[in-house]
Amino acid sequence: MDQELALAILMSGRSALLTGAAGTGKTHLLNTFIAQARDQGKKVSVTATTGLAATHLGGNTIHSWSGIGVSDHLANNFFDRLSKTRREVIMKTDVLVIDEISMLHDFRLDMVDRVLRGVRENDQPFGGIQLVMSGDFFQLPPINRPGEQGGGFVVYSEAWQELQPAVLYLQRQYRQNDEQLLEILTALRNDDIRRHHAEMLLARTEVELPDGDITELHTVNVDVDAINSQKLAELAGGERTYQQTTTGSKVYVENLQRSVLAPSELVLKLGALVMAVKNSPQKLYANGSIGTVVDFEPLTDYPIVEFRNGRQVTMLPDVWELRDGERKRASISQVPLRLAWAITVHKSQGMTLDAARIDLRKAFVEGMGYVALSRVRDLENLYLYGINRKALEVSPDALAIDEVLQRTSSEAANHYRPMLEEMKRKQSVPKKSGKKSQSGSWQQKIAKMRETYPKAYMPWEKADDDILKQEFLQGATIQQLSQKLGRHEGSIRMRLQKHFGEDTVA
Figure 1 (cartoon, helix red, strand yellow):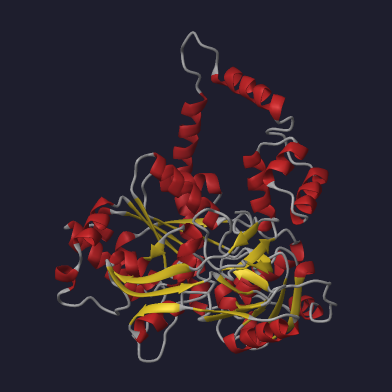
Figure 2 (cartoon, rainbow, N blue to C red):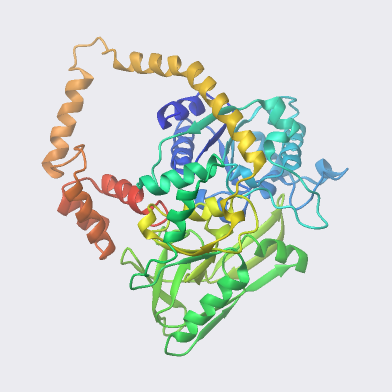
């Protein structure tokens, strides 16, 4: 299914699952839908399954938004304890978005369903709210920890069976532009890895690394911590240490810490490679932005980071909260940075990296290899320490689910495509009036725009693309690129996001 048809289905008010391979533009389409739905006056509540995923969309965790918190079941007095504010938010919501749905347990989706039906006193699925889920079941599954209730993918929930959401399976690839890597990732999704695929990957273990820092992905935290500590120790100069401050009981703080990428003790030096781990409220940087510590502010000692877009920012402490309904259970305050020489595969989900060195020798769960390998755009910028058999496996459940989802998506496309064509037909019929046609008006607007931006609405040529990428990496601003390339700043920004990912271009 293409993005245009998927967006039309979402705008029709139908509850849906937005899915597809890594890099097919799920987050971009989700953001477009959210903006258009709000423009129509709808109240859209944006959530995700983890605090990290929620920050990509500027939302909250589904656990916090619904009031279910960290519980595995609804207490007998749950509705009595639910705050008036939480009830009002649920009552006013027209659309509920849940991103990274693959990581939500089936029983928790049922809990959310019961909460919404109860609060809204409406026995339709999710109390009549349009539910929009987004995610890829080939990526990381729900985590079942010892001593906690176990569960599976949300498709096994009672709420899913009753809701019967439309499936919008995106096909076009936007992140990967390399046929070899796409072939490997497709083979992984089909559980059809052949000898030549393995040989292509193993060949990347023998390639010499280029000069400069490259972010590494590892499967376990201990390796990530060791690499970052070693790289930091190799830098000259003194250390600066920033301790997190917390509120709330130990168990809640520990639970919140799992969703916070900033370490409890952040140790930096001049020249340290760092990553922003939260979106800047002033849009000075984005979650996942990479930069280097170039100085420390004289009075406060806070780090000054130069990000790869050339912008220098003094990084002030930020706050993360864990809420149970409207009750704040815990909070963490810390400078929103972490060392970026290495991160875990789990915490890289949703990111796009220019290049990465990946260690999959200790992969321990299906889908881990797929998540890691799909973070880069092409095989030439993928460097491997090694890879084990588990890294080349995908969940048998995900395989079975995917077959059903693709079939269901085709049925939805066949059902809704005539609706989209009819909408286009009506929009193309000129209005009867004495005024000039929309076509003529549009041509005039383009002509007027090209007085300022000579290449407005023209196809991008390779030469211009090369200039765009090269000068952006050298620190040119969007305004400078706009003037040089003769295109509107919005067009420049969208093209940069296509090449470097949404998080790179704040």
